Image (tube, rainbow, N blue to C red):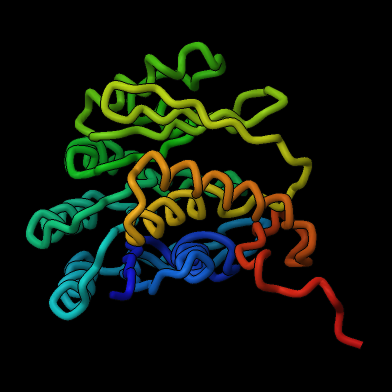
Amino acid sequence: MTAIALTIAGSDSGGGAGIQADLKTFSALGVYGCSVITALTAQNTRAVRGIFAVDADFVAAQIDAVFADIAVDAVKIGMLDRPEVIARVAARLRHWRPRWIVLDPVMVAKSGDRLLREEAVASLREELLPLADLITPNLPEAAVLLGEEPIRERRRMGNIAARLQGLGARNVLLKGGHLREETSPDLLLHGGEHCWLEAPRIATRNTHGTGCTLSSAVAALLARGRPLPQAVAEAKEYLTRAIAAADRLRVGSGNGPVHHFFAFWSEEKDP
């Protein structure tokens, strides 16, 4: 059987994050990708210049069209900017009941531009967190979901992950990339067990789309049948290698993308 993953997210015209990053990741990991576009963004590596919202009914229609015909193994959810879209996505997923749901609570672009409206935070917390098999917030996103100041100490991550799980998410991958440490530590709270995943901190400005890439990699590996802890560990390794290879790309003049196809593209240049 063909492993199939569905991304429900916004479109990044610069190609480094959102739907584009998700589909690249699915392909790189041997999974067929489907997509539901929730918003169009006019953005590049430096800024988000505009957001065009897709009607909530049409978002729901895309979801129904995919599930009515295609056997989706895992769903990754990214940018959902409005309460009405969040409500419709949650309703359709409750109807179709996919095996795996990975929620990346996208709130702010790498450029610093806000992607989630303030009034949508409560909807995200109440409608989607209880449906998620795994949520993948970074530390600033976790703070917004919990209504507190950003977390700056690694020692607090266990408590924060447990509180997020208390909101309804079955499992939590709390990303510690914003900590000022030599490594990039992530904490997986799987059931009641804590698992730390460490990776070297790579010196590059080309980190656009890292959150999208990690969550879609987890979804892809779940679609391929990996147990959740193994899927998370392999996804972390894939992202680390994609960041390490990012400087092989020359895309834009701001925060460029990671290299999703590092394992396939030749480093040789055309004559």
